[in-house]
Every structure is written in C-alpha cells, then in structure tokens.
Image (tube, rainbow, N blue to C red; front, side, top):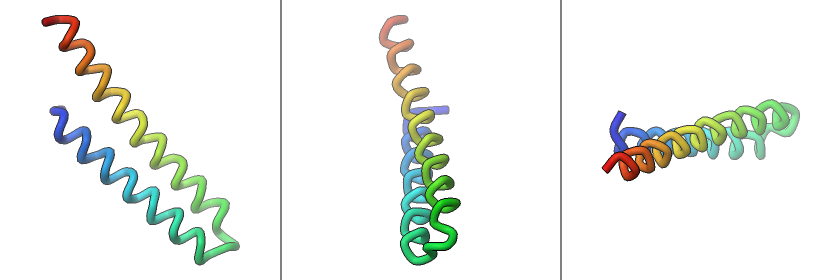
Length: 63
C-alpha cells in the first residue's frame, strides 16, 4: 500500500473516532462503550502510522 493510501486511512480512522467521541457526549448511558470504540479506531490509526513510518525507514536504509 502506498503512503497516500495509508495516510488517507489514518484520516478516515481518526474521523470515525471523532464521531464516536461526539456521539458519546450526547449519549451518556452509552458513553463508555462509544469511547472504547473511539480508542480502538485511534489505535488503528496509530498502527497505520507506525507501519507507514516503518516502511519509509526500511526504504531509506535500503537506499
């Protein structure tokens, strides 16, 4: 997967996490579950970023 696609995934995942956090603000009874979902999407975004920078580092070392 190229760098642009990875960064687009990161933006998408963080947008989804933001929507979960916003929804949690308006649904206090479900907020713990919604905030957990937000944390999971943020973790996915972080994993994508780590993969992106690891791939860039590997390319720089190989060059």
